[in-house]
Amino acid sequence: MAVHEDNILILDFGSQYTQLIARRIREFNVYSEILPCTATLDEIKSKQPKGIILSGGPSSVYAKDAPKPDFGLFDLGVPVLGICYGMQLITDHFGGHVAAATHREFGRAELTIDHAAGLFDTLGGHSTVWMSHGDRIDRQPEGFVPIAHTANAPVAAFWNEQRRVWGLQFHPEVVHTPDGTTMLENFAFTISGCKPSWTMSNFVESEIARIREQVGASQVICALSGGVDSSVAAVLVHKAIGDQLTCVFVNNGLLRKGEAEKVVATFRDHMGMKLVFADEADRFMKRLAGVTDPEQKRKIIGNVFIDIFDAEAAKRDDVDFLVQGTLYPDVIESISFKGPSATIKTHHNVGGLPEDMKFSLIEPFRELFKDEVRAIGRELGVPHEIISRQPFPGPGLGIRILGEVTAERVALLQEADAIVLEEVKAAGLYESIWQSFAVLLPVKSVGVMGDERTYENAVVLRAVNSVDGMTADWVHLPYDLLANISNRIINEVRGINRVCYDISSKPPGTIEWE
Image (tube, rainbow, N blue to C red; front, side):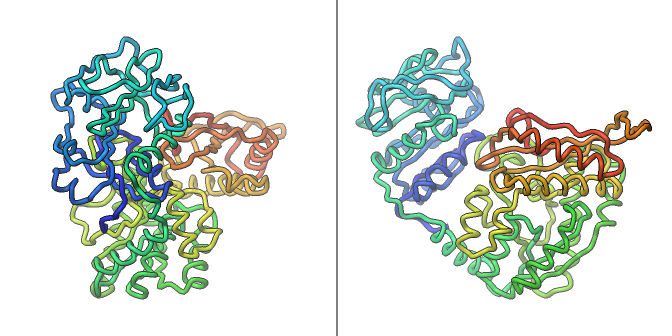
């Protein structure tokens, strides 16, 4: 991607929140890019950053394998902000002391601001912040001045005016730090001197140019699911290369009720895009027979997808590229993205791809969040019905059916899930909820219908709100709505006699059950 005149560079030390920092900066219309913490000084300088942020991370600075940056970055003459682990790195490098905290600090804390300027400009004397650390700054380095504290962290923030280096022991990027946006704005604008010149329109222009350069005269196929991400990716790539793009829509037998027909009608009939419809439900079912492990399911589904694309590409000349609508939350939960982060679970877009895959990937949204992709969709004129769709996982209902996936169990869940969506839409809540769906459990329970005993399946309803998919809270759906959904599922879907509601948040749970 081209160098942006005004940008904030982030070095990733493995925090699950790293991309949230970039997202917050981008919300100010300032370009932000992430590099691994192992980036060389030349790589850092090549980005010509106006400011540098050192992310948090799971390590202790005193651990044998603790990740360290090229400390020459402090001599570049640009402001540096260390967050959590980043602050501890600064402390250790400049001769301060980091020690294990007497009480580990996780969650909300009351911050007392001792110097309301710079990062804390326009803020009052107190602010609620989100802590997530087991170590604390025991002694700040020489030349650094403490500017805020909490009951458990005597140095919760510091700065060195001469070096233009700041440190925060808490996470300003998360929504649980209400004034965090102001702090990051102060760093981007007041301290680093950036101008708000980066927009989704700029992103679209640069991606179109990049895709054209990458593709050249080659043919491209797109893994089209009909969801927000792949749909907007298809429209973006189509805008870049036109009929060099062929969309391949695979019916894997794990789609929502009526989904296949809707996708074909939208993209082939209404949007005039080249579309191949591959009805491969039986093939997926055969490969998934007897499989109950979630990771194995995901990888099987990913591999079968690629087998199908291989076959479709073989029918065409010069197909060298595969488009996917992969988002950053998919990536960060699957692999260590830029820094030493922990694997949560594999996404079929990311972890299910074989090493000998014949295509080069085009993933224009790999470092973006869902709301940013929706903004790009609006910029491209994608229909609102598509942009507003709730996220649907790549492996489809295969990871919402716990235990073995069979055609019969898919049919059960399709009917139940359709009722959930119908009722949520009828209540006017569909677009205000991040995701709402049903999960089929691998258990049966005793019930009674009429005067007869039943022994049938149980489903769980899941409804969550989220901004970016990284964290989520369960939705307090109205009791009347829950009652309507439950009554309809039990009365209309033969084979289900019990409906439960999932009140888990992320973390500690994930949004999907598998």
